[in-house]
Amino acid sequence: MSDGDLEQFQDRGYLGPYELLPEPVALAVGRRLAEEVLAVRSSIYAHTQSDMPSLLVTRDRHLESPLLGRLLADRGLVERMTRLLGPDVLLWRSDFFAQGSGDRETQPHQDKQFSGMRDIPAIERAGGGIPQNVTAWISLTPTDRRRGGLYLVPGSHQGGVIPEVPAAPDRSIFGKGRVLARTFSDGEQLELVMRPGQFVVFSNLLVHGSYPVSESAERRLAISARYVAADTLVNPRGTETNGHGLDLRRYGAMLVAGSAAAFRGVLRAPPPASAACPLEDEDALRPLPR
Image 1: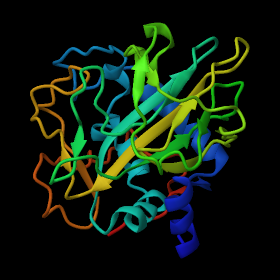
Image 2: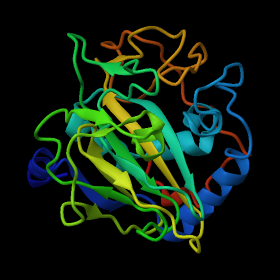
Image 3: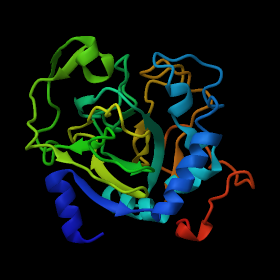
Image 4: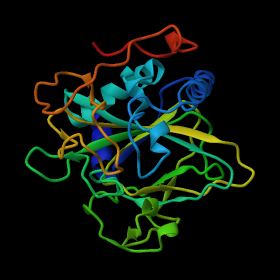
């Protein structure tokens, strides 16, 4: 990552797309994750309930899947995160996005502190306030507008937090009854057309959303991985519950680069490698950072 890339990230709030995996490997990895991971409920949250039942399948599966844990700690991701966040980096959350025919759009929003339905901040600066989070959004199937693709609003992070106003729940940000106080035209939205195995990275204050899925479109599968500097407070209100009602007693952040000496929360080790979850082409992934 060059100094010009860093300047672009500061100016536009995103970078990419980059290639993480060759397309055939990405498609094979996506099939395996769908069959072996998304087909069963998470052991991390098997004991809990959630305001959004889908999270019991889609949230933080890198903590138990060697295949996904290996992918999200890949050098192609982590080296970029260290340039943007510093030498000590945590992977604190991941989400699957599996969308199919006729699924609704995701309203434009900012991730901010990932506070969920209950408005409980999931990340916080040590001195209070919104820390820097960098999301890697990884496509494992073709991504375009017809398939409910992602769009970004370049530069929208520069004004800080955009106020939200009331809206009908079915047309609001994740059903919370609110939308951003300002709208963004098609001309302001950067539509991302991505091949399987490509990813983009963006700031938690960058406005983004996704298009509705065409009735005739194939299923789209993507993963978002959330990274922060290791001095960030993760779940600062404790492990009893988070913004979606999940019990966090089995949860922990994962160190992917540097030292966790500055981290005050719960850490979990990467899931142990297993013959049941190899990559189809192990050589397609660069060696993990030491």
